Length: 252
Image (cartoon, rainbow, N blue to C red):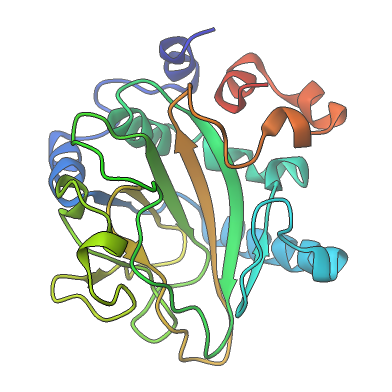
């Protein structure tokens, strides 16, 4: 199976995204997709993430990354089939496919809940070196599992920065400082924001008294190593339940 066959299997067509969607993603470096998850799905996701975090305790997130001030979980595909939608939803995959020019696979599926008073990240790109606009290597999606607001640590992005051929650590004196051009990705729970991972972005401080939950379904080009090696981490039981298209996306 190849990527074009995967798109057809998932029902992705030339009209899955509008011309305006594509133009906005190309120019701004991100694209909100509304109502991808229902209220019921959002609640189920949060409940399941809380269960996994409790089960894993201090080991939570260790497969990829642990971060002070947050609850991180990793390898979610292996932990519940409910998360399969995060790498198979047609509108999400259509946007990922567009950014990566038809050459994509899942790199990782993780969650990040910033805790009260925590969550500030320096502006960064998810690629360690500048790239030209015709050579994007990675693309991410943020699945909003609560309403993202100015108060609870919504992700900030610098629109158009994916076209700058620079990374924040080299271009900015203080990547943690507020950027004059940054915007907050506020929106309703159930929204998914696609963002070209070369777009400068980072979490902000959660100023309320409850966690700010999100999932990150992260993709890379097929020749790149995955953030989490799916072959090494997915159980035989998980792999056996996947269809051909899912296995191709996961490269297993």
